[in-house]
Length: 242
Image (cartoon, rainbow, N blue to C red):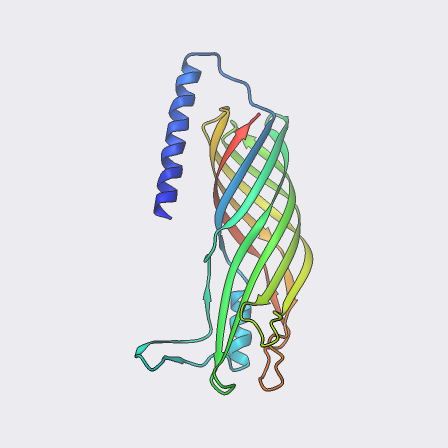
């Protein structure tokens, strides 16, 4: 991850230097009407708190020892966040400076929550959750560098058990939600063909019901639970204007 961040930083500085040299030798270029960017990022916030609370209420909060070989034990429930990066792509068009319209969409990995119950013969329960979104955005831009925008969003939420059942079928719960998105961006260099961008978003998704999970007749399931999918996204991107 450190190598990726260093590569992005060095690339940004190189692009900035080349652009400054070009602008110093020619007339200041006009802003291009279109831009496309691809993002990689990580999230802040997820449904983990409600899922962990439900696991505690239903007994999936036991301590699991390290086993015969003396490994360290684990307290449950616990959540692993940002295990995998999230991806996004955006297309934007200048209506008239400083306003743009655009559309963004992508896949967001929100994390995985793990529970454990000793009573059910050492019952592990792993729940993963994610969301896809597509969002039109209207933005205000300052000098083609700083951007703030807002728009409605359609979210496709998903929660599933990452451990397979004996019959090989995983339980999945999917919902379509309508919410909104607030978008912040910082681009450098301005008015250049290629650019580097830092991006932050707040995504309001609302609540979705997930569960029940693991309805094995010999085990106690985790019942239906309402969880909030609201989250923040922080990402970096390379893009091109044309």
